[in-house]
Every structure is written in structure tokens, then in C-alpha cells.
Length: 168
Image 1 (cartoon, helix red, strand yellow):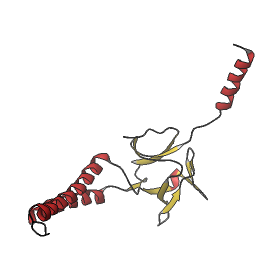
Image 2: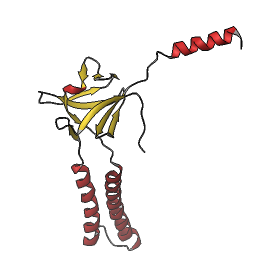
Image 3: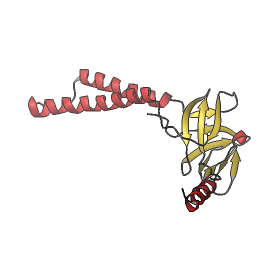
């Protein structure tokens, strides 16, 4: 190998070495990742001693702070983190299926009564009970899903990591 090739390789290695990876903000519960934030994501939080939530867009994350457009907030200063949408795949799947199944069952029954049987519109009591129970179960699951995470108890914590593993 020639001197220019070795010099080029060393120059490349020394130029890439000081580069650092982008940090990601992770909400964890006992080392299990609940949610991951990246630069550009919207986050809603309440600081210690305040009575209101602040909604900001993340511009960057360091080891111990979250950077926003006009301020930097330390992880230790955040009291409550509020998620607008949280994916818990099992419950979300059940709720989504229940909502869609209830609506589709009602629509199919109406189509059957109107087009096939020639009767007028108006669902039967059995259809209303079944579709209503499916839809109400889905709504209850969505309403009872936890969206606020308090950091007082120590169960939840924020952590900056320089890698991101997508949950499927």
C-alpha cells in the first residue's frame, strides 16, 4: 500500500473519530423502554413547582438535559411527563379491533336489512347490544390507558441514549 493510501486512511479515521452520535430521549420503567423521543418530536411536561404543562418541540438531547428552542431543561427538573399517544400493542390492538368490529357489524346489519331483506332502516336490539358493547369496551380501554408518568416515586426515569432500537 502506498504512502498516500495510508495517509488518506489515517486522515479519514481521525476526522470521523470525534463525531458523536445523536442522542435520543427514552422514558423507561425499570429498564423497559416505554417511549422514545427524537429531535423534532413534541413533548408535554410539567416542571417541579409549576401547576401547568409545557408543550415544546425537542431540538436536541444531551446527557442530562433536553434542549428546546429557547430553553434547556434538566431531566431532574421534570416532575410529570404526559404522552399524547402511547402504544401498548396488546391493548391497542384489542381496542382498535373492538371499535372497527362494532361499527362494521352495525353497518353490515343495516345493509342486510335495507338491501337484501327489503326492510327499512333501524337496527335490531341484538345488533345494538353487540356493537354497543364492542364500541364501549374499546372506548373504556382507550380512556383507562396511562398517559401521565410521574418521576417522584422512582419507577419512571428519563435517559439519554445514543442509539435507537425500534419496537415492533
